[in-house]
Image (cartoon, helix red, strand yellow):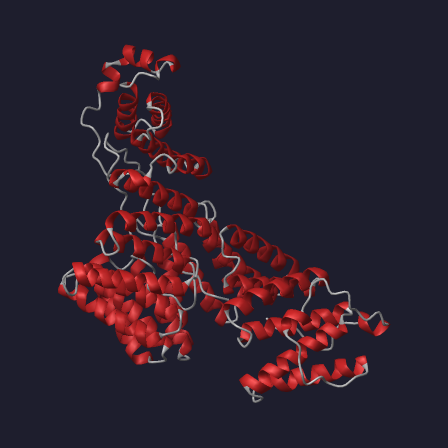
Length: 600
């Protein structure tokens, strides 16, 4: 199963803008975790709380001093007063600044938006209204009411008219970015990405294709594509960001370093380790030139990961130890950054057969996570525990791995924006339960993971296809054959699209689907799938793979049962895998279980 990567998410901050709504939100890029042993999810960005970063008003006592007139102004009948909207928005700002709580501020902001709406001139879009709606949505998000923020922002983006000039265009851009952030916190990655794309399009039309602010948004959108495991789209956007920064930034700038780190993450996920290493070395040089010692150490960890993937273990150990020395001296021995390096070393020493050292580093990391230093986030601890659980799985200790995954999921289950990460953990738990023979619980974990991945827009990713295949295997063990067939069919469709028919994951699903069809009595369908697989191996993959002889034997058994010989001209899968196929063999022999096994 793919490993899980989570990164620190900044806390939501409510900053109510002043009366000018024209400053665009600048999407702040989230630093991706440098470790990614496989395509993995990352934490989505926090919702952008407002359309500007204005400072709170210094006159915090004004609301209390004007208590009697405030009551009159808050009367519904007086909302058509053009002075009331700005006043209420100021009250909302002062309420937040004084720490009185967001609920009261929300009431003021809602009334302000109503006032702006009533006072708007017919046919003239009100940027003040758009601004107040952004503030209302930000307060909803701070209360954890993300679903209620969505319709408010959807209304806000309809207010500006882009053709009216830069102010309207940037107000629309701000609304789309904030809406994208809110969808991201709800785990709706596909909707989030669409909003970011709309925002980027508006920003490029207003500022031009090569503005530095466009580069910032491109990187933000690239990170969202990485989270959704859409690496080709992320690659294109990141390259554009690099091109813009080459024009507008000095050589070896911090902006270029951030771009190259993201580019390295994308290359690593795509298996292009040499390119990833090149980007990381250049990013490290830029950070050294700018005196960013801790960032250099973080890049050293990423470089160690690449060396480990390339089996250059001595160089990996050297990179990890360099980073460990810096983290211990600058952050302390019990900082989660130190624990993360311990986890990397544990994984490396397992690969090199030094099991005692590997276990020791796991235990050292767990001691740090058990007593986290102040400021450590739940996401950091959960990410570390998830990675350690993978090592315990390699130790053939599934029960211990399960305990760690359960702790990680408990830390994240109530956190907004963690739907994809929790789904990944549930999928891993499903695999663990399957390994120990708890098939009903395994199916339940997979079912929950599948539901979350469907909701988050990852239903077309290769990872989703793998999870469907695993859930199908659990259904087979529970004799739920019809359900297993549906899952294998959906997994086959996704993996063919994402990985191609010759990929090992796709071939495994073909084999599982053939076995399921055999168990259902659909002998002809099973035969045709195996004929197609054998043709693929003979023409494209070669026959040296041990699976070839196994599949050939399986096909011979089915052909003997069907009373015919092998058809050398295999049909296209478009014709041979039909979930509504009526072909079935009603013979008693078709009721028995297939003689060949299933592949995980």
